[in-house]
Image (tube, rainbow, N blue to C red; front, side):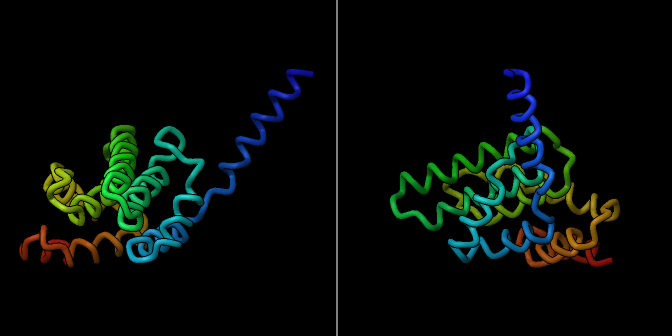
Length: 167
C-alpha cells in the first residue's frame, strides 16, 4: 500500500512539470510585470513550482518577478526583502547554468534597472559582452529579438556595440 502511495505522489509531481507554461506566455507576462502588479503576481504564481534545480530559465523569471514585487510593496524592509529573495534565486539559477543566454539576459535587465544603492550591478559588463557574443548562436528568434531590442535601448551599450548588435 505504501509503495502505491509513493508511486502516485511521484506521478502527480511529474505531471505538474509536463504542463509548463509556454515561453511566449512567460515572456509576455515578464514584460507586463514591470508596470502591472497583477501581471507580476500572476507570473510568480505561474512559476511557483520551478526552482534552479528543475528549470533554470523559469526559475530566473520567477526570481525577477519576485524582485519586481519590491515596486508594489509599501514598507522599505519589505521592498528589500523581496528584492533580496529574488536576487538569491536568480544567482542560484545562473550558477546552475552560467552559459544560459536567457538567464544572463534576465540578470542584465534587472541589474541595469535596479537602483545603484542596492549594489546589484557587478555583472552588467560581463553579461553585456556575453549577450552580444551569443546573439549569433541563438536558436529562438523571439528571444533574440527581445534581447536585441533591450540592448539597443540600453544606456549600458555603446554606439559601436549597438552597431554590432544590429548587423
